[in-house]
Length: 171
Image (cartoon, rainbow, N blue to C red):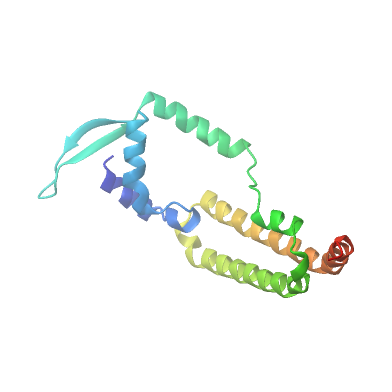
């Protein structure tokens, strides 16, 4: 398939609705895949007045790499460290009084993001496969988990602040 064909396929399959991969990134990705030998030029074709286009196919190494990536995606658990955790573990002792408002606002933003994601899924569900719908539902579930954790944190905040105050060194 040529780059424009992949771009059209990405748009038809609405990958921007359930991934963070923009259709416009297709050409850069193809260049990288070709340089790594994961796709190879099969032929050059020309249709009508359009410019010549390189048609690529997945190479044997590309098939192996694709299989490995699918397996990795299906078997590995990826939960990246959140910068919030470091900031929470090393609070500014002179600004502890700001924490309730900070976390209340953060929770409101998370709830807004969840509502937007749920509404978005409702709008695009008709364009998605069952698996793509489940991928979007996974993102929504993760947002719900973040909200639940933040709600628990807000409940524990007085205890956290009291502990931090008890650790303050006298000036």
